[in-house]
Length: 204
Image 1: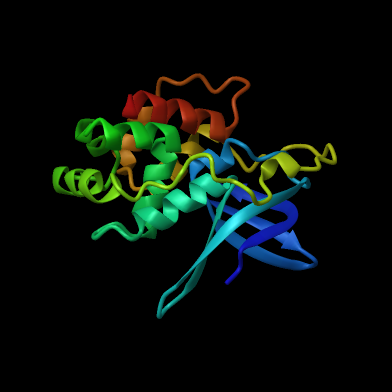
Image 2: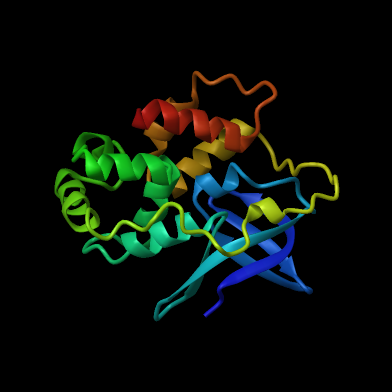
């Protein structure tokens, strides 16, 4: 099991990023809560990781905090919630917001997330109530250990188009993703900024 990775950030395009760890490039899928914390391309970062092994692939998921990884691991134990849906939930809500939804039986907030229907939301509330990880548990390295070498940010193309693509990867339909970002001004904003604003307008 790979517990964490420490390396140079060489690529980021939500929900995928790549780390160079001693000359080996690790492809990692991460929630938007992690992307919001990422530094510039070329900086050194530490990610808490979880490896999902399938018959057709080994997929590595990365998180900026131990709390997010613990939440991910708890979510995928719920019947009907796989890694992709868990990533979507963590992208649409912070760990604190998710805790609040569960404790307040707020299924309406949960069903606004793509892939979460009424039955899944109800199952999440029932099954997660007694097994939510402690938000204060974080004794391992986090992105606060970042050492930024000042290299410029990566620009792949149109940040709004990148945001739409990322939202589609998180489970939103292309038409819905386009509507979510169409009224957001892109001036001075990164792809991650646009996604954050789009998700805030959707889940609140």
